[in-house]
Image (cartoon, rainbow, N blue to C red; front, side, top):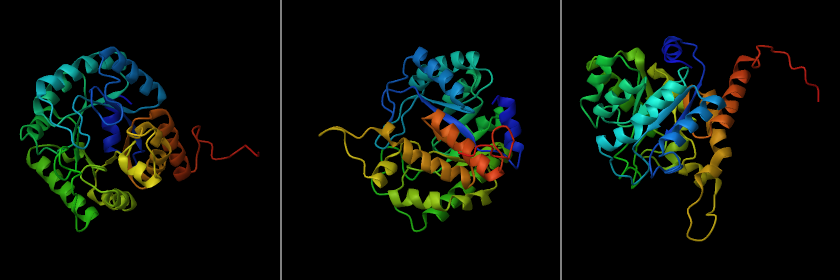
Length: 301
């Protein structure tokens, strides 16, 4: 999906669910930290995700896993910009986003070929970010998070997690509009795994369709997250070793299918190939047609 096609998708009230591939160019992300810190490896991964069906690719130079610490802007730029420049040149038909809370990183990324800014702080970490988005006319993803990545999983507490997250997102949508951002360019993310317990995450998914009342596309990121492993009772591969997040692919697929069936506009995933198939299958179930538009199933076996 090209940037122009993405902008048209934003304006389409019957928009189909898109697949956003995760490209972490960090040494310490929870699932794939260190694998793509080399720019050549990162560009190759972007090409593979595009071939597997990614509509968007989200490039981030700062881990936001539970317990992580901030990375300064200069280091984020050093990690992200060479990858964006090279990948955008190789993949002009793909929309790239930058995963950052910093306005200077976002500005450099937009100059390097990113089209979307994905801010897990929803414009709270850097007061210059929303005005930048307004000036540049870029689409922006605003996400809910209780606390900071360092503290968010210590004791997440809510009286009504869905109601509180929805109210927060409504407030940030208003804040963006006050800063001059076109509300039609905003996507909203309930922040699965960001300051939520297992129960909170499951309730947000169960009540996901309620967020469609906000009137903006929803971004849902469940991929490989710890709550999936806890629900499924995963065990460490060996004593003293942490569970492998990549083994959560089937649990992830269940959450992606649920999200696509319940109003998600974008699913953010690591395993692009399998999750693209999940989204296509859900789309066909909802619409009653296959990939070719033929509603007749000719297979009898």
